[in-house]
Amino acid sequence: MSNELSINKSDGDESQLPDETPQAKRFVFTPPIDIFETDEGLTLQADLPGVAAETIDLQVQDNKLTLFGRVQPSVPEDAKLIHQEYEVGDFLRSFILSDQVDHDRITAKMNKGVLELFLPHAAKTEPRRIQVDSD
Image 1 (cartoon, rainbow, N blue to C red):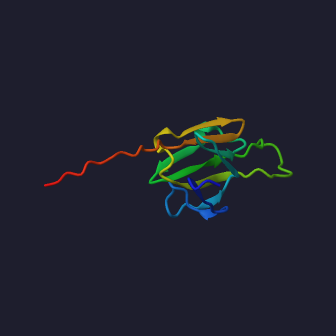
Image 2: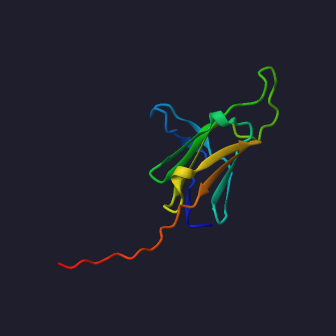
Image 3: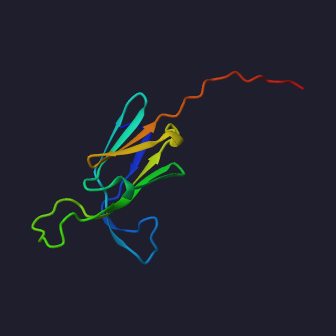
């Protein structure tokens, strides 16, 4: 994996979501993530079946990318759940970004239950000669 994104992963546990009060705790799970790199930047794909784009909250602050939201149950109220493998509830993932990612140009799109984030490489600064003045 590239050194431009390190993963701060925590498996599902009784965690506090960023917008909750300390008393309100719920089970939080971590969706599966794939990350790949091209010459243009990194692509992060999160598997979020049944999640609508408008229910996802993405934030970048202090080199930390956080994605969180809620997966609602899709079982009709009058049905009896026999077997369940999809996670239901709140999800949370955080990633530490390096300075090699251009935070202002990060984009996200949702397609068929897969959230795709593009993390473009930051422009490299060209070396320049610095004039040394004398007194």
